[in-house]
Amino acid sequence: MTIDRFEGDYAVLETDDGMVNIHRSHLPSSAREGDVIVYSNGGYSVDREATDDLRAEVRDRLHKLLTGEDD
Image (cartoon, rainbow, N blue to C red; front, top):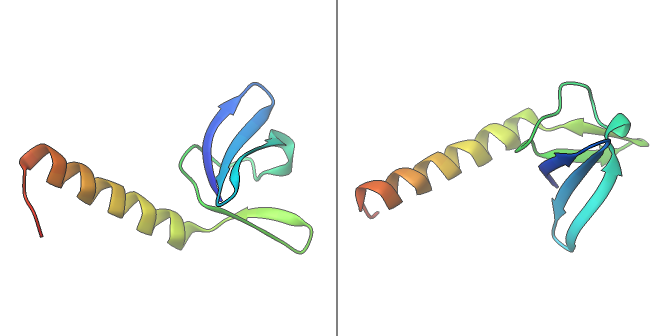
C-alpha cells in the first residue's frame, strides 16, 4: 500500500484493490505521501526500503520521460 495523499484526518491509501481511507492516527507520525506502508501485528509501519525503491523507480521514469531516453 502507498500513501497517495492526506485529506484532513485521513490518509488515502492506494492498494491493489483500489483506494482506501484510514484515520491518520493509525499511521506512524513520520509517514508522508508516497511512503509504502505495511500492515502487520495489528498496526501500520513504513517500509523504508520499498519506499526508497519506489521513489527511485519514479525518478527514473520521470527522467526517461523528460529526456526521451529509452532502455
